[in-house]
Image (cartoon, rainbow, N blue to C red; front, side, top):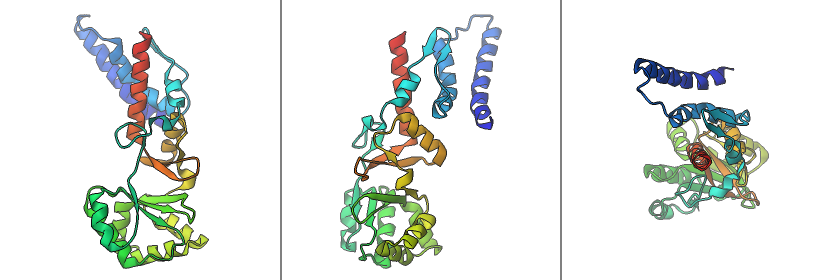
Length: 257
């Protein structure tokens, strides 16, 4: 109920202002239906995310396509950085420190590690984090299973911050990555900031409604999207998801006029 009131109150406030202006103008102020629909967007989004929206009628407009837009596969907007939903991520594996300038030049967004590799050294992990986060591109630390399937990811800048602060050490992280044993996996999942596991990731074919629900549950601003083989396909951003959904709704409303 609290969530519903949080969403409804701004809409009711906007609606009250519209009515007040209409009264004070003695009917001279024209209130367009589209403006009321715009004020109702937060309500509609909340109802969609929680599965409560069947249809929404405002004036002479009936929004019946909202649920249909949300049910479309999330992966239909797969993109190489511009389109809406699943953003391709430039991911590169951690290697020799001499490769760091190459990764900066390639605008690496995700630094990939593989569990059980036994080849990671703490000083090199720290150097990678420090130098790559100094550029604006690196955003995620991606961890794969031994077979290359996605296991989890963490926020690269937050990981760098906690290792710099001394709360965790890059050596501790490297040791767990090298091992890949269950206890070490549990440690990584519990200690790495912003960690998202494969269990919490989205299938690239998930509907937009499912994606919205997952975002609501997790509170995350971005979630990994996995292909049919369990490998990282890209990232789904909450803001891009809502923008795409609103664009679809607008287009369908225009088509129904």
